[in-house]
Every structure is written in structure tokens, then in C-alpha cells.
Length: 152
Image (cartoon, rainbow, N blue to C red):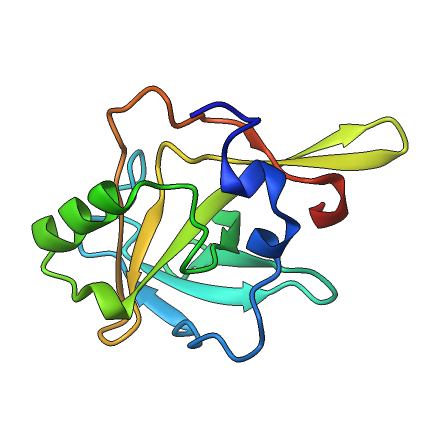
């Protein structure tokens, strides 16, 4: 999946979830922790004013935080088979699952560029407020998928 063909890279609607979308829980439990941070198991989602981004902040260590972006259900950039496989593996009902992507922000001239990690989506079960980050093995999912400049 190249940057040119990913819905995240080409469709601005992916980065601006509608207000009517089912809301994400404010607090998320990560029973397995996050890759590289196994002891960080409880996080709070803090919307960033004036943007589609949020901060995923550890409640155990407030200095540990990640900028994240919620994907629209019909344009995640992740194949339906991958989502189904994760839902089965983690016993999540597909209709309750939302995806978050970790965002990397970089200065670019006088502005900012944003990239999402499609290789390691965060699966959120909105019904139970449980979440897990799954690292996908398919190298076609980029670690640094550029977002449209309007999203950053």
C-alpha cells in the first residue's frame, strides 16, 4: 500500500471524523500495555483544540503521551481482513471497534508535516473502553504515511 494509494494519504475526509461518529471513551485500558511501554496500561484521550488530533496520555506517567488521530470507519487505510483478524484475536465486536493511529509531527519550513503509523494501529473497543496496539506484519503498511497538509 503506497502513500499514493492509501485512503489516509489521499482523502482529507479521513482526518476529520464527523461529530456524529460514535464517541471514543475518554479513558482507555491497555491490558497488554503498549509496545515498548508494557507497564503503561491506562491512558486518557485529550482532544487537541482546533484539530482532529488528540493526545493519548498515560495516567501512570503523565510525561508519556502520543498524538493520535481517529480514522473514519469506512476509510481506515487498513484492509478489512486485518481488522477482522484483530477483532477475532482480541475478542472485540467489529461494530464497536475504532482505530487510532499514532501521529508524528515534524517541522517543515514555516509549517508542520504530519505522518501516521499505519503499521501499528490502535484498536479501541468503544463498548468496553479496552484498547490494544497491534503491529501488522505486512510491510505495505507504512510507518510514516503522510497526511494531507490541511490535516497538520
